[in-house]
Length: 399
Ligand SMILES: Nc1nc2c(ncn2[C@@H]2O[C@H](COP(=O)(O)OP(=O)(O)O)[C@@H](O)[C@H]2O)c(=O)[nH]1
Ligand SMILES: [Mg+2]
Image 1 (spheres, rainbow, N blue to C red):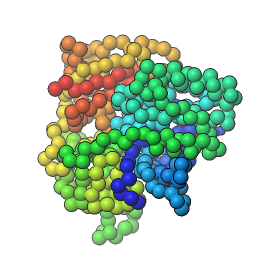
Image 2: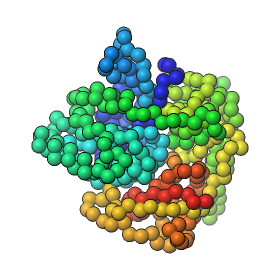
Image 3: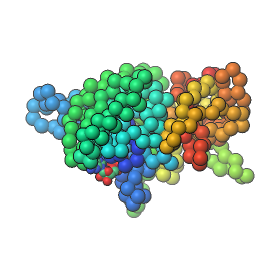
Image 4: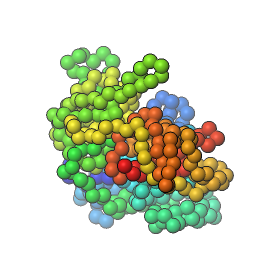
């Protein structure tokens, strides 16, 4: 792989069953629903990861290397769950993407989670969107056109208003090349390689197979996105808030973890040094018992001494949507109330908090799980409505 290829992270979002995972396997050759529960229930539960290289062959853009083709772009995809119960997972995925593909089934059209995911992209300030009208093999021309108009109406008046809408059949492999063309057109965001590293942990795991001999054991692995800065093999790093420690009487604390980078991986490649951009994984010298089963998801990593402390209280300005998205009917968003419980999504961290104070359009929230909040982070705000967390707006930290 050419390590200087421009890189972009693309999220695949949309209502459950509209064909996200199927589309992703077309785009990358990888099926991301691999957990046993996902296979059993036929739905995506965790974030899925897959990547591909785009090649330019004359005027054509594909994901297959042939003679006379040159590699032009490296794309990391994140497959988000579409089920309404899994909105928090979708939100932490939305924190690590530069662009999104919104999948809308041509036969079913805009559904509650189509809207909710689209609102989440707006809350994350995303500009680059490709809409895929999938399953055109199942819908009449009239139905497809009718739903096309509804998609247009959804996008209208937002920064994503002019997003391309591509008719596709993921299952039959129709118009997949049009998606590659659009992916190639997305402007690569400017990355800051020089500042202190900010790595957002989206997953953590143990890659050792049972029975492996001790000298061959790998250290704990962190997967996620290096938002800025550069990481090198050998770097001393810190992970915050870090390790969850349960105390008595339901109390808990977090302990910063300090460790060292043993190896760095992007797709199938191991690299000595990695700059900001694609989805990567870091092998650390941590014992794998500390990283297994996503235990460090939501943490932030930097080189030693360069992260602020995790906050247990945040002061923020909240901007609420007019309408609750994600529900079948229409419901206005009621104003925030003191002592109300919210779910906040801050980068890949999902935490619950209580509003302690409201004054001058600012709210102060005490957090159940402390979070690292960096300058300009967008904070997704969800409220529990009829037993589910529904996205109602977003906020930015004021001090
Ligand atoms: N007929 C048809 N079925 C599709 C198409 N894309 C996906 N499917 C089917 O729709 C179902 C849900 O697809 P999946 O990719 O799991 O949806 P997800 O929940 O959005 O990830 C599966 O049975 C797929 O085989 C398509 O283009 N045409
Ligand atoms: Mg899926």
